[in-house]
Each structure stands twice: as structure tokens, then as C-alpha cells.
Image 1 (cartoon, helix red, strand yellow):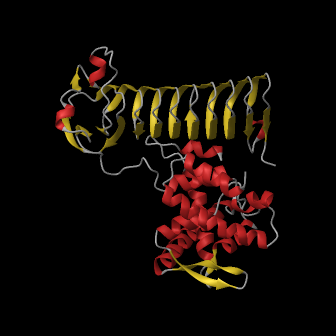
Image 2 (image 1 turned 90 degrees about the vertical axis):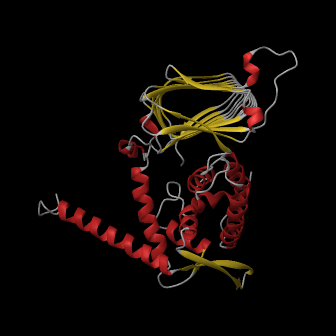
Image 3 (image 1 turned 180 degrees about the vertical axis):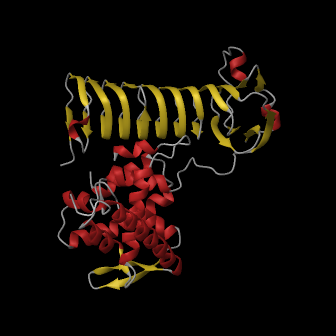
Length: 122
Length: 318
């Protein structure tokens, strides 16, 4: 995490690296919703299998995306008792996903291009 | 303390709006119930939701906090055209809140919630490259105590101006500074809170008795903080030189910070550091507990540590 401080600019935008990571997690969160609506715990549970939450908390991202209009929420009764708050991906959310996905593909494509330049893996 | 209580405390500490806190807690109550239905224990919640202080810090970063005001407080009071690219600031107030922010305009603007009648007793002028704003009380000593004005001031400084020396003193008023670029800054307050964010400050000196201190997203040349009973919270702080913090009974919570040398001393306050990487670190406590949790355990050289009856723990999260 400390490496991010190399990216400090004069106006104090210190979080270059975390911002990049946040974008990736945003992409992961949005991707989960392409096929189905999910409730909060399910999102966290699925992502925490792959992402270290001590470093990247997921709820703030879900919350911010909701505030940005990427999700609509509704309550639905569950068999376990209390109704659950479900998140549904909106048109804005789908667009946001597409943009992030394109960025990611371009980035990762560039990285592969560079690391494969030597030909073989060393 | 339960996860929810801890989250509530951490959010409140960061001045997140009450309505936002309620909303976040309601969501977590639901999610924690689901987690427990799945068989997770209270102790395992951190592994799904993250550490409460870290979670709160991220939420506070993207949520509306109480002292954040987009519109200037009060009506426009004075404007000054600035000829020099540098400006010194000297503010001495009693019960009034004061905010200093930057703006894109060309003039220095001062806003206030007080009426004209009250404002005429304040001294406010720019002379020899120095802005002074002084409450009536400071003109002379009064046996009958200060005239109390519960109002707010906001100074908006043009972005192009470099602040060469900022001195702000209040007794009970809160101090807010956002986006400041200053060679030196010194704040003194007895009961007022201090909140500095997103700034680039050469030498920062903070003195407080009871008012809490919150510093975030700052790049500093050096930091000297002294507090009696006030709590200090630091987030995303980069100090090129020394970071010195002295506290009597106030707690300090430092997260995401670097410094060349850090010296933390406390009598009975507790000190917590997370992802806190001074190159060299000196710790001193009488009865307060000190706990540093870093992922990279050996990145900090502890040059001195001593305690009488407190505990000092330096380790990683797992």
C-alpha cells in the first residue's frame, strides 16, 4: 500500500494506487450483477473468497455505486425471516460496467503485450 | 465491543452525518445477521466485512461528513484584491468557528454568519501581506469575560496564493482547513475541534486541550502535535521529516501514514497505528497502551520504546 505514496501530486491526490485497485473491485462488484439481483451479504461473501477484505472493504464500493445510480434497491421477503435488501443493476450501472471492462481489457492487453515481448517466460 | 458498536463509534469519530451512519448500520445489521445464519462468529466478521476502523475510514472518505459545506457559510462580508502571490494569515477568535478553504477566484473572500452590527467590532484587514481577523475580546483584557459570539467565519483564499504563515487561535470555536497550501501553519485551541484535510503544509504545529484533531490526506514537511485530553485521528498522512505527537490523556489513531521519524508520547492515552510506516519510530507511554499493526512488519525500525504500566504491541494483523 505504501507504494501509492509515490503518486502524490501537489493537490494531495495521494491514492493513485488504491484508486486503481478500487476500480478493479468496482468492476468485480458490477460483474456479479450482470445476470441476477443480489443482496449485500451475498456480494461480500462471493468477493471475499478472492479479495482480501482487510485491504479492500467491499461495502463502501457497493454503497458508492448505489449513490452514483448504478443500482436500485428493493426489499424482498426471504425464507429465513426478515426481508432482504436486494440490489438491481440499472442502465447506468451496465454502462459503468462496460466502461470499466473496456479499460481493464485495454490495460491487461497492454501489460501482456509488454511482458510477452521477450518471447518466452523467464 | 460488538462489530456494530465499533463501526458506529468509528463512523461518529470521523464526523459522518448521523443519517448516513444510521443507514450504514441498518445495512450491516442485515448483513451480519445473514453472516451469522451462515455460521460465522462475531470474531470472524472482520474477515468478511473488514476491520471496522478501516471500513469506517473508507466510508467517511466517500460520504458526506458534517463539517463539509460546499456553499460558504453565511453572507459575504469582505473581499480583498491581492497583489502579492504570498499571504500570511493571523486569526484570533473565541467562540467563533473558522474555516479556511481555497477557491478558483482571484480575490480573497470572507464570509460570516454574524450580523453587520456584530461584525463591526471585529478587526479584519490585510496589511504588509498579512491578513488579520481578530475577535473584539483580544483588543483588551476584560474582567467580565469575553463577549461571546456564536458565529462562523469562512475565509476563501485564491488557489494561486501561497500561504506563508497561517496562525489560527480559538478558545471554543472549531477550526477547519481544506486544500491549504502553506509553508507554515499553527493552530491553537482549547475546546474547539480541528479538521485539516487535503493540504500541503511545510511545518504544521497543532496545540489543543480538549478539542479533537482530525487530519486527513495531508502532505507535511513536519508535524508537531500536542494535546491534553483531545483525541487525534490521522488518515493518509505523509510527513517528509519528523512527526512528533504528545498527548496526556487523549487517544491517537493513525492510519496510512509515513514519516521519516515519528515520536509518539502519551501519559494515559492509548495510541493505535495501522499501516503506519515511519522509517524510525520512538514510543513512550506511562499507562497508555500502544498498538501498531502493519502488514510489513519489519519496515519500521523501533529506535526506542518505553512504558511504565501500559502495553506496547507491534505486529501484523494476523
